Image 1 (cartoon, rainbow over the protein chains, first blue to last red):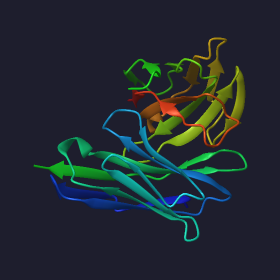
Image 2: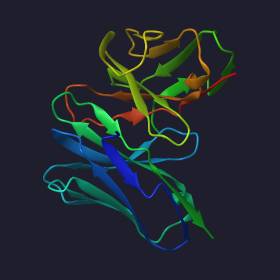
Image 3: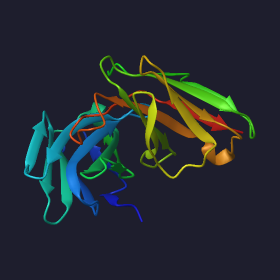
Image 4: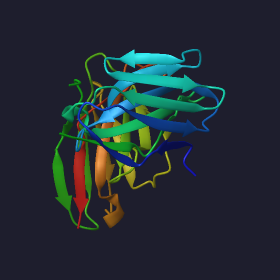
Length: 112
Length: 115
């Protein structure tokens, strides 16, 4: 069973609307959690990195939250744009061996 | 756009053949990690190289092997290709493997198709 579960698997939103992606993890011991954006056929690009003590981190229209107690994170996209169409991947890093555990990603499609 | 480059961008091979994929790490980075990403899935860790030595390996068979060169560029070799090896192969470089907070920068990937 994957240690990082993302939901929904995919979603379609209209340009200008907001959306929230979810990430639940069981990875332990926890070091940090990252959200990546991956355009089709390209490598992932980092959006945010959060450590245990950080609850919220923003990067432009992207805001990530982390609840380390419940092992949940979310990525909120505000005022979506067509260029936000991509796969968003949640990655959790272990603190003992620095291993990265990837979620399967949420595919976001923004329509005009 | 990161400074990590990969070649080739696309590759088509047949079952049983061998393939070599290449990665140039970002300037100043001594650690390179390789990942396999099947369609619709998240990347799966293959192995990592730090200063020319393998430094960790995922659940991949020995026919997946690699090298890192003195300039920290790297190769991924896959022997006896199987249909399931069809995937996007990603290379990521970082300044060090010793800091879990150290960010990995991904290349654009090589799309391998095995027929």
